[in-house]
Structure formats: C-alpha cells, structure tokens
Length: 230
Image (cartoon, rainbow, N blue to C red):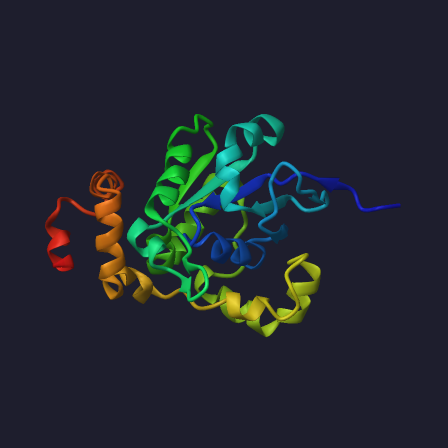
C-alpha cells in the first residue's frame, strides 16, 4: 500500500527575500510532528504524508493564489513581512542584476492585505531574527504547534543532521544545497539597505509610493530616513 497523502495545512508565503525559506526549513526542527514539502512547492498541488499532524508548504507566489488556496484547503497562512528596502537589495548577480524591485514587493504585500480569511498570520522577519523565542511561542499558541527545539538553535540541528533531514524531510532539495541555505539568525542583516543606498535612491525615485508604504507598515515614522540617501 502507498503512503496516504494530504494537502498542507500550513502555507508559508511572502515576498521574495523576506525569510520564507528560513522559516520553512526551521519548521520541522522547531516543532513536533511536521512534514515539509519541496522548496517552492505550490500549496494547491502539494501532497504530504497524512500521518503528520502538520504539513507545511512554502512558495512566495502562493500569495497570488491565496483565495484559491483558502477555498481548496483552508490552511493557516503565514505571511513573512520584511522591510522592503532590505528585500530589494538582498541579492544580485552580474548576470541578472537585482533579484527584486519594490513594485514586486508591494504587489505581494497588497495581495496579503486583501486576504479576508481569519487564518492569516503576519510574521515580521525582524522579529524572527531578534526575538525568535517570542515568534515561536506565538506560532505555537495560535496554531497549536508543539515546540521541541528553539528557533535560535535550529540551524545547529539542521547542519549536524543535514543528510538525514535532506533525504527524509526536505524532499526535493538538491544534493548539497541545504547547508548554504541554513545559517544562524542574524540581526545584523536588518538595515542592510544602508550598504546600497544608490539602489534605494533609484527605487524611491521610480516608486515614490515607497515612503507611504514604509510608514503604513511601521518601518519609518516620516521622511527623515531619506537624509541618509544624500
């Protein structure tokens, strides 16, 4: 007989570069009785072993299909929110340039804001890296999860047992790719936009609505921060 499969009942989504992969990889270590899907596995098509109480999928693009997901499987939806300035400077390479622009971050955020389901949880990346125990406790109490390893210790467990986790839990992660994706929670990455102010100036000029969004989301109180761009 084959393994009985079921859809995810927890869906992690958010903007690209907002910490979705980090939280996703921590889930089966930090909480008991959790199965996770392939990285970037769409919630509607994902199927995981039904023997686990909690089945988790992760895809930033799922926020574009959140209403369809709600109707089909009605999961808990976790939206990772991160300062858009840090997201849009988070990664670049010589071939593809910057990975994310502000309008793309905003599109995902507005999809989340329009979601009317009562099982949407907002997790700030900044809280995850600065107060991981509070975030873990909040997730456990709200959803009903059982913590087994503190978030702050998860990277040690993953790296110590990388081969077992890679083959038994992280189905579909490429051989050798798990290690570089796992790192300690690092508050120093908050405000990383200050190391690439030219990028922020360019994006602010192209998308002046960034200021209103920063105030709306609580990342800034006014325009005073823009003096740093001079």
